[in-house]
Image (tube, helix red, strand yellow):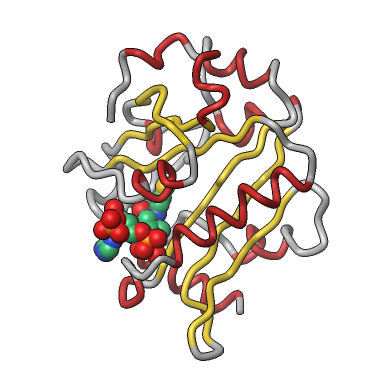
Length: 190
Ligand SMILES: CC(C)(COP(=O)(O)OP(=O)(O)OC[C@H]1O[C@@H](n2cnc3c(N)ncnc32)[C@H](O)[C@@H]1OP(=O)(O)O)[C@@H](O)C(=O)NCCC(=O)NCCS
């Protein structure tokens, strides 16, 4: 399925966002998993998740304090890393079902705190907002220029909306039970 999923990723998240290894490393892993949405035997979308210990908070999330420190103190943290659905199949519930299964899988693996960094494009749209909110996550902080941070993309990110360099931001979402740990909760209303 990986070649088909890579096509979805390239079209929806940008040519450089994921590589086949990002899917491969989830297979049989204790700390990563991936759900795939199927239609007629063909993969049409995916959700990749990571379970982050303190050693992976910085390399994966590259956040600054205070959010960095709060998440470091909350490990293991469930991270909804990449969700994408083929454009022809959007709006039919695949994204919501996959994220719902991710939440169940985090719980089954003993993860309490769940977060996501949602892409907020330069036009101000957070594609995945409703999907996350339906699954109990809430926005706590917007991080400007997140996808152009050299800690994540040393050569810049090829954004499907604004190209390279990417000027989009990210919104940190956290599961509803833990938003009160974040000081910016009250100021971030997305
Ligand atoms: C975000 C995404 C995964 C949602 O998948 P999906 O299968 O369409 O999601 P669902 O059908 O469960 O939920 C639909 C919701 O997604 C949102 N959505 C975003 N783009 C959409 C589109 N082109 N068509 C339909 N819904 C879209 C809407 O808020 C919609 O809400 P509604 O059902 O009340 O209208 C998908 O739109 C996608 O791949 N977008 C591009 C990549 C992306 O932004 N990924 C998230 C990165 S953080």
